[in-house]
Image (cartoon, rainbow, N blue to C red; front, side, top):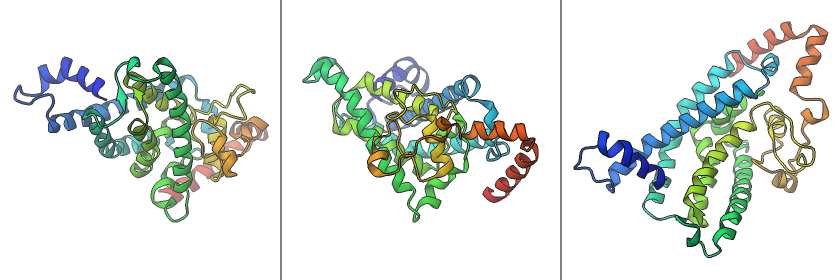
Length: 294
């Protein structure tokens, strides 16, 4: 985050925001700046990428599903935007440690002992390390002793939209994001690559909630896409993984996506439309779920 902080200092914060007596290296100034930048960045990524996915990719037919809640999109956005500032507090503590030089982030490819080979390998290790950690954190959050406290709010969205991607309880959101932030404290990672992966993580998180179930057949057994994650929302105890199906297979929680077998949410909506049941059941289903969840 020091790259982002340096740019913000140079172009905005030093000339226009902070008094000259506040040194750029001051701890209080850095923490305040990181709080603003983290919240602003999170909001821009969430709302911007979420809107692109919602308007350009998300199949709005899913909004006719009986489990799609009344005013769901607005509720997802409201919940996420309420949680993100709280999630940012512990996240900024980690960013501050990075800025202060406690991580293994480096500036130049030549700084890594393996050069470009290390650069490429760090992408692979980042994906597999974070996928492994998130699988177990996610599964832990489903334990009956804590599920209702932290993770249940995210499962209100049985048929999610891209805006459900960040609609977590703050504790849930921070814990599932923690592996991304602790990786550079454990392993060398290029600073620019870290920022690129941070953006990628947000894109991926949105993509597995976007209702686009198309996955190249070759990758279906290995990649945890939107179809896999939708079944997680619908059936609860399956497909905890983030990018890959590896740990779900090892942990016995893999479920082949119902949408890829012609039994997904879209097929249900289309069948109900053909049978003329959609209007009545949609209205009744929404009312019952709204009363239950609120």
